[in-house]
Length: 234
Length: 250
View 1 (cartoon, chains in turn blue, purple):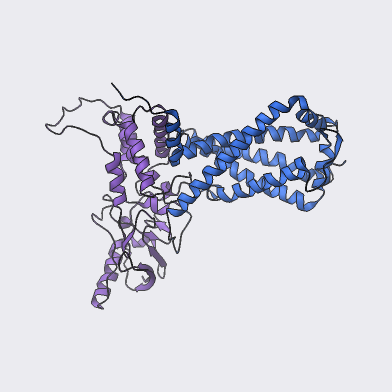
View 2 (cartoon, chains in turn red, purple):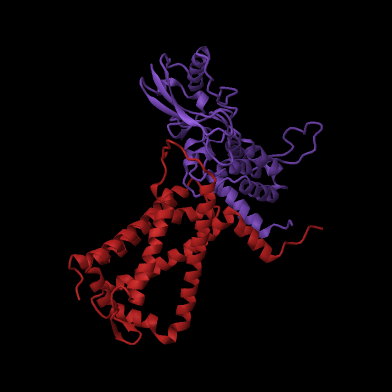
């Protein structure tokens, strides 16, 4: 008779120990975060509504104490995804760095994706941006956050006054360009990490990943640009 | 033509090593890269200097013995070939070339451009084989393999284990090598019984050999003399994930 399966905990630990297991964790957490980025963008785009209160009503809906439980479930899941994504990335990076203690005097980068080689840096800067973004518009420690009433932030006011500062707007734009590169590599790479590659579909996946990443960046960058050019005003 | 070489010279495994400049004045465009190094070595021996140590064997591009970095590219600028099949007609008079050994913690330098690649042998010993009873030859065509499967398997089996993938990978990962061996066997009926055990054992061994891991950059694929595709790494990932979640072995 065949041996019984190992205990689930032991199995999970062995999975996490292997680099391919960690890459799978990065792919799945990356997918969760990608879903969030899409949802967040759709929320953001409501700022273009002719009804100036539209985005504030959306914010009030999210902040409504009646929705506190789902909100915190989602926030906890996102935080867990961010932590797992970063911990696996750092552990793999340390292992990979140790795998070549002495580098080359001369090293060419043969036709390869710039985005792939800079994942760590785009990841670190986007990570720093997320912290800044939360401090800026959620916590309100960069600029004071205006509220219409308790649990009803004046998002439109906060966003527009924030982006009227060119430094703040510039950092948002830079972070979105890096997010675009990070998403491009991540979006097609998650398929490779999870074991999907096909000569017919992988080239299409890469093109699709580039398109989606650019659309997300353009959508988000349009907001600071609209504020800076005076298209969006209070 | 005249070629200027900057070669990594290292007396032994414990020597620190350094780049040394050489000039090879009368290089014929018909010479292979290794023949050009032979000419340099003849000259060094005549001058009573230590010749440059480099690995080579068949010089037909099929054994996997030769190879070094040429201006930061494994096996030099010509895609799909080993260093021995790179000819000097691809260079021009006065070119300066930097020759360095494969660099990886798992591939320690033995001397000059020669590295110890026994880590690859240990990867194969961990699982890159099939267990069969030796004896009389099996009947021809007793085990049928569809053509497309045998072609895919042969594409992966073309790997000669030269180590260019490890050398070029920014993470010094052996993923392309391992995945080629895993794909080669996983596509054939003979590879099925040990399929799960093989992928887990080889991936585990790669970690012990202190190779890095794959970040889907594709530099290995770009320099592989046998043009093994990144697709085999996805196959390995798929087999590993499947074996990890459904395997029954202790």
